[in-house]
Image (cartoon, rainbow, N blue to C red; front, top):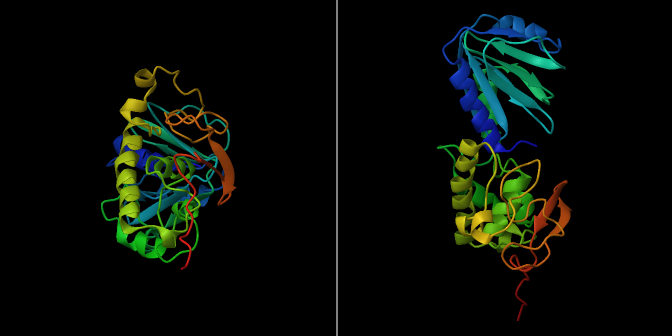
Length: 276
């Protein structure tokens, strides 16, 4: 599933391609046809992301709410639009560019009030200036759920997905199975600060890179990662391979409906102190 950096990059691309222009809006697939007819010819004001949600604003305080889900894509390209290929749910055509939405789990015409309600339901987003990490900490510090689960809960931390979860916990040497109640405030702050640093880099590069310079392929004399997800990572989708730092075999196990990846040596299992 696309993570928060992908939606932020998409919002920036839509702004660059269409903001301020009158846009032809259609639904070649037909599932968004009635709503598209209401927007056709309107000025596209701008786009913003909140966690894994995207909102495209049109004049008249009308917004298209998009959630890509697992397989959705919103492709933006310069120049005139070709004939639609596949099930295009939403097509935008402006004087400079075009964009096609396919496979999204959500594509709805909503009001600003609905947008505000969705944003309010989300946890702290490391990519938003209005994020409140203390609000996330208030939930984490009271929860017996594992920090690996909590990071995937969009009502706690918005925009973090399976890759950032695995990587930030590895970078901070935190056991992903450790309950939220056992974390210290400083540990949570370090995780949050790392996300605030990493995720904007993902927006710029349009991929997730998490290895520090000293662990990059050229620094370590190793081959670059060969994976269709791209990006240099420590543990994500590296199960059965040696940890880049200690050589221990990276492990995987399902958690929160996704495969978790971690190094059992670098992220030693947390044990509660015995009661005396």
